[in-house]
Image: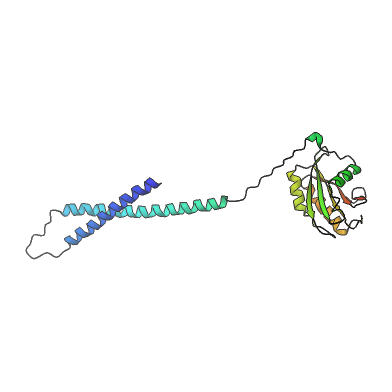
Length: 230
């Protein structure tokens, strides 16, 4: 592209010179002649030849202008395409240092409550409300735990979109959600029931089962599954 542009510029420069010389020559031809002087000019044929070259030069100039316009359009198009391609790259990666044989398996309600108790910070169970999720594979072995939110004394906000995003990233087949009540009250609130229903039905679109929602306190547990609330 650069060499072609330089070549065209050279031709155009020569064309401009020819064009300028031709104008000068025709100016000489059009000068008034004295009476009685022979008006024949032996170099007329040479000048007319330059007129033809001037016509060609003008065509080259026009071609050069069109070439520059086309180049500008192509560059603008390339820039637009480059900007269109400059989007964030999303990469899903799941890494674990736990061997499959070392992963705890959940077979009963007591198994899930035991694991939930182990992953909870005893110093916070009566201090702040937290929301955590256990992700399980097809064999009901725990792939990992995800802390969805940590709030205040009276509540916390868990975003179902973040929970499902983490579940998909972990290749989970099922999950158990859990949160604590610092007050020690095991009775689920209306908001707890609505959130459970929302997560359950949203997970179904990804073929992920919600096995249970456990409320934990310093002294006990409450299972949505056992109470028939799922």
